[in-house]
Length: 376
Image 1 (cartoon, rainbow, N blue to C red):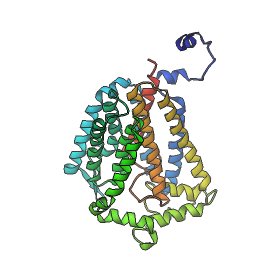
Image 2: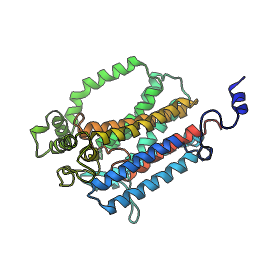
Image 3: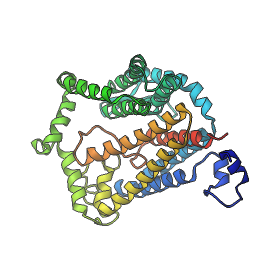
Image 4: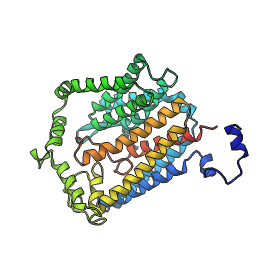
């Protein structure tokens, strides 16, 4: 008996549980529940980290609402549209990144935003974290896998060009994530391990040249990574205070809304990049563990979904977006606890922000679309 016959003759109520109304709406229940758990956790912690600011909480809630609407809408679009329009989306966002360099809005020494009066500003670099894996997957999906050297070279060009434009803003953290998003697709395409070894050697030998072109503040961040105490009141302040906050929380924390490092302004950017330090201080290691379980649930579900997809484009896109989300999470936590330099990467779906929240939820909408349309 074939698999299709088995599905047709299976009695109602047996087999795997599926919520049919949600499935017909192309929404995956388990992924949706995981995302709702993360953003709910984040809203509570953001309210505390912001000094119980209702204004900031309402702003974040509205952005999350927009993000879920975007997720729902893009989940309804059939995957063939993503395949067809990936080059166009990539090209449009690439032009936006060029526009940022000339007419972009500036804040805190960086020129990263586009916007017109009367409308919210947005970061095109956040959109590129989705456009890049779509583009690389589009390019590789109908070519021999593992990719040949010439195909790999073109894929790397598609990654390096937008990453370089983002780095020029300057926004090294997002440039790393854009690069990771594209490399994740190449990795899932089945690149030879020997090529990975050669790439690692090339990176190692290029480090002196990279150091010579880095800006002063970037060099300072790398040096601070190895010795935060060399400038405890300057470059090392953030890392020292974040470690102090996490360590002082212990297992169960000081209590929600009872943190001192953030509420007494010792911890900079407590509601954005360093919000996990607030979590560690107020609800301790146990609270961080709960959040990591929620993240692990979302990542595991998304990887399971990628494994169920048979077409190359869909599998590469879903796997690439999922691995990018994992790297997003890893870089932020590693940055806050001092094992990576501070590069300005927020905690996904938790930190205060606009474009990043909408983009992340939109990427999960793409994942749901590709997975739920796979049998239709």
